[in-house]
Every structure is written in C-alpha cells, then in structure tokens.
Length: 308
Image 1 (spheres, rainbow, N blue to C red):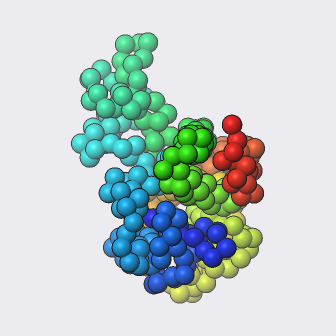
Image 2: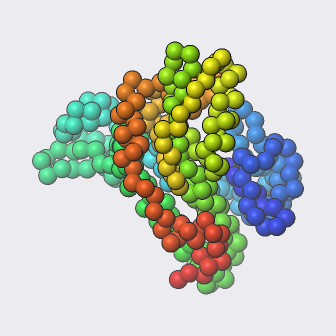
Image 3: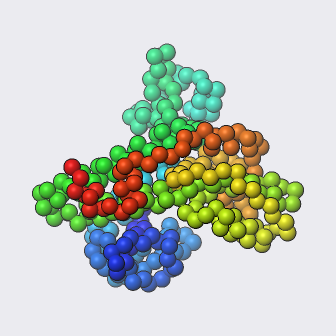
C-alpha cells in the first residue's frame, strides 16, 4: 500500500491518477513535505516524498496501514497463498455443486467467517467466503461490501474524535487517515458503472468501466481506442448504474476467465453467455445514497469529524 493522495495549495486532496509523473507542487498530508508522483510500470502508482520520507508514511508503507476501501481492489481477504488455495479447492470440490464440506478446514477460514458450520453438520461457504473465488453475485456483493465501507468510515471518524478529545499527539495522523478514506469513498460514489456491447468485425465483445462524465463522452473515447485495432467498431450502451463505482473491480475479478486483451486494453470480455452476465448486473438494486455518503460527496469534512 502506498500514499495515493497529495494536498494542493487550496487544501484539496489530489489523487495520483489525476496528475502526470514527476515532481509536483503537492504536499504530504501527514508532514507537509513536497511530493513526487511515481507512475512507472512495475510498482503501483504512488506519491513519494521529494526529500526524506516522513515517519508516519514510512510506517504505513511498511505495515500496509494506509486507509483502504474494504473489498474494493483486494478480494483475498488477507488470506495467505496456502489458505487461498485451500479455499479454492473447497469451492471446486464442494461449493460449485452446492455440497456440504465434511473435511475440517483451516482455522483461519473459519475465524475469517469464510466458511461456517451448518445445522446439517457440515461446513458451507458464507457470502463473504464466495468473494475470493468470485462466486458471489453482484447484488449480494453489494450487500456485503456496502455496510463494511460505512463501518470503516465510522471507525476512522471515532478514532479522530477520540484523538481530538484527548488532544493526542497523533491527532493530525488520525485526521489525515480519515481524509484519505473519505476521498477514496467519494471517488467510487461519484463514478457510474457502465456496460457496453461492442461489435468489431465478426467479434462480439463487452466492456465494463466507470465514468463521472456523460456516457456519450466515454463511448467516444472507447471508439477511438478500438479504432486503432479494428476498421469497424459499433458500440451500444447496454446499461448504466449510478454511484456504482464500487462494483467494477469485483466484476473483473468475478469474470476474469472471460477477459479479452486488445493490446494494452484490459477491460474487454468475450462471454459465452452474456445474458447471464447482464442479468447479474441488472439484479443489483439501484444505489440509494445514505446521509453519510451524501455528506462525503458534499465534502462536509468538518461536520463529519465533529459528529458524535
């Protein structure tokens, strides 16, 4: 995990994805030092201190302790490689056929609530346990992830409020953690999820993606990208889901076996049963913003910190 946000001269948070590589005029949220945008091909894009890395950031990098959205871009749920492989084997041998697991699993799989003991006398996959293997439908994924997003926000708010109450030396760090998390949450709430049908020659492809702009603008960009690879490109917007930026990466995880690369383009798919995929998407309930989510979108940071 890396530092993904810098602070502009007007005290706004700027994401690493929104600026070019190189030295910036942005400063570190934790210490105020200057930042350089690192956007290479090996490491994840991030900000590094132009001079010496401050201790709060160094500690968070070392312990992977930067605020992160639960179940957004990592679906292994903190399992080791061995535990994840065990879970996958259980899914292939039992879960796919909806059969009970009579073999005692590793304690971590039970402790993490990925597998649970059933009244019938066997273990079975929980909704959370189906996420690492990409088996949880999108509607149920939202039901698992959305409460966890707000629970973590509440915990970070409480930590900042406690630090404020006792005038802790770590108050600035707790506030910085909260600001970063709110910025991450705002980004996915602002994004709308879209699903496109694309005909290129004799191929029928589909694309998943997110955008904050009118879908027509995004479609024009997609058309331009594909025109570099195909003579004829026809695009149809199958659907758009407002405020569903949280779903994109799980969709890619769930349907990774159907991913279809086109040069450096990676968000395209060739499905054997696209109707089932579209049904999975359309089973999602319309996103209704909670008051605290509206608060995040409106950047009411001070009111959030002072809320008791």
